[in-house]
Length: 260
Image 1: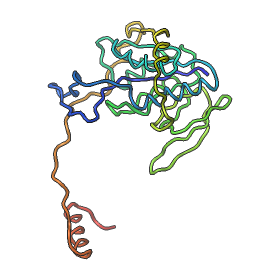
Image 2 (image 1 turned 90 degrees about the horizontal axis):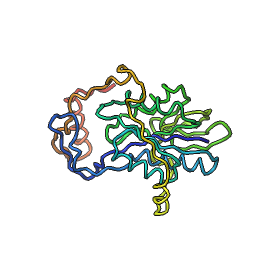
Image 3 (image 1 turned 120 degrees about the horizontal axis):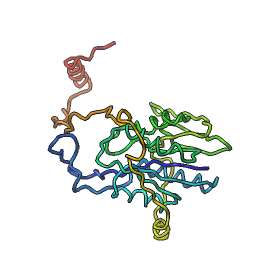
């Protein structure tokens, strides 16, 4: 089974005081540490497990600059066979542009299955995977929380709203966007790191892909990035239950809530 996994290097923002960039289009990233997108960890682990069971190859793909190769090296250390970095140069891309670039690179590669994370931690858009599937004409499913491979198909479980899951079968070739918790990603061993250094890492430059300007034109424009406004603390209501209910109903009425 030939599997392609799309991964992304993202800033680590937990427990960090974020600052807005002067142009108000992004956060200040210069002093932030970078890591593999959390959802992508589960995707690469799933790919390696499927390869161990069914054979084939695992190829990790990312779109980014030279420093983004560190996430590809981690994928190689986890068990991927090959890695490809797509260098965008100075070109800024949104989700639609990223999907078109990935599709152009992935389409000629042998692939039975493509895995992406449900979303990226930096922009939280969650659109690239499904757009990529549509561009490649692949069967697809989103928010996959479990999968089991069969001959020419996968049995999957997808997370729906309200705590409801859906179990179904999907024919290969297919694309899945995977949810965190799908598996337990393995630790990268010293031996894995040494082996990763010997595995091929190819670089593809955006200008070599023969994409038209319309293919890369921004479909989403960020007007402004800002921190959530500070709000007052919670109002504590005390008294007997009847009094609390009376006050609560009064507050809801003032906010425009009407009983049906």
